[in-house]
Length: 298
Image (cartoon, rainbow, N blue to C red):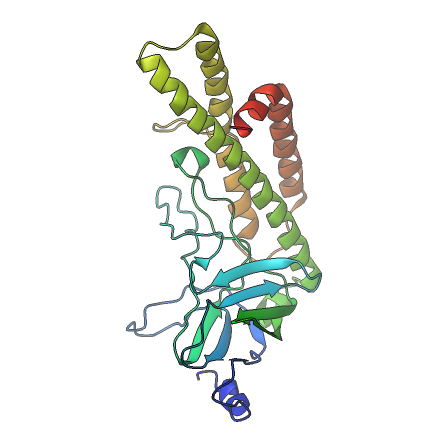
């Protein structure tokens, strides 16, 4: 049955007033949604957020979602959708989860509905293929989340309770296990983002060097710099080809998907692998400190 909780709340709203309705408690489920014409139809999984916009209300609609520690989990707008994410396609070669589709708030006169998919913002999306595959953020842990809607200088807030799937609890997975999983997944996500940003910087600098090298205008210093950049790039980004050995960014991505693919307490091997790859990246940054610092300033 559709969520009719909003109908009871709407009776107390003046038609000329911006309104944000309190969402019903939401179970933290994992399943694939289907198209509206599919039989059977599986609606999008997540928190259903209903809000009301009076006619001719100026400005965009913003929706920020915060956790119990008052940390921003996700930010959406009616202008640009998800502020930090763009539409992505699935990578069928690795059979990994696709990136999050762009989620855009509607701003129509009257009633509006939006579904938050219970996920954090995904890793930084590379500007080019050098940065790796797009990916969605990890699911949030169970808890109370604050919704903050801004429109036309009006700020409205509501809260929603995200509850663990009872079947997951029956399998012996606790809320604390899911919080530990979330924390580790976010650490890996952030490391992927940082590595992708460096990879993008390296790729841009190499493109500039290539123009000079191809035109025969590159100095010996530029050629040597490009060789160093190529070495760093080859340690961050897996070379194209069949059966190539994955390097840092792909290694981190694989670890990330192993962590988030199911509701579970991560094994010690996941923590060990994260620490190993984190040390490896820190080593690369130290060894290439001057080179990375130089390209990051340009």
